[in-house]
Length: 303
Picture 1 (cartoon, helix red, strand yellow):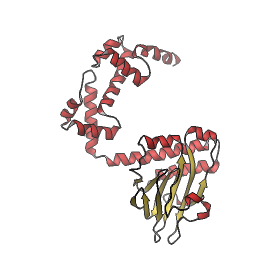
Picture 2: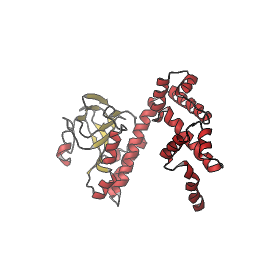
Picture 3: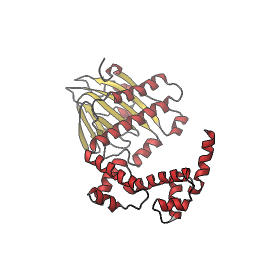
Picture 4: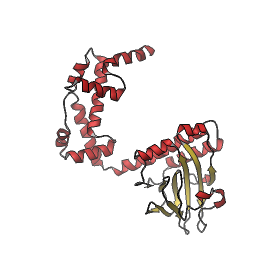
């Protein structure tokens, strides 16, 4: 039994899906794991794959997403005009409509895990930039937790119990999150974390004041543009968006715990325009500040 789950080395499925699965916006279309020994033509078990999938070594375009994880051996991955050297611990992301090819070196073979998926939810991730044509190759290394995600998908497919597609796709989402978060966190220098932590401290300390972007960047000793770049890379929010969000959270506390008017809350948090504050509050919470206590009261009674 291998350290990374190679005991499942002959699993291969292409899956049907229902209208109910389509409504969820997430569909697992294929999944498997296989060992390709040295000297074996790729892909092995060629006739067990539908025709569009068989030309993986020569080049193909698929209508679905795929994630392929290599735990043994070496090879190559080509996508969108760029070529990558595949080693143990490499992850390949195949995007719909993008020409690609991959295969192991004939002298090494490899062991691979894969899942294929489609649906509006994943398409939206691509459209909004969470998945990108500019980033289709990752190196998380040999990680048991990644193999565990694949095996959980395989378990759902083997059993095919009610809503197995939903369960399988939640594991695919978790797999994507594992890969993306590891990539971003490893790729950020410790300096970024220190800048963001200090900036957050400055903002928290000045919730009841008016603080500008240059005020923060001056205290940090870097330019406003550099500060914004670092903060957004680390948090996916601009400094202004983060500052407004924590002001709104503080406003919620004031409105809940104190006998205070909306105008007083706005002024206390540095908003000179009460109506601008009210619009912001409603946009962030879905509730007008004048109704915040009324909104909380039923929940308190329910407790």
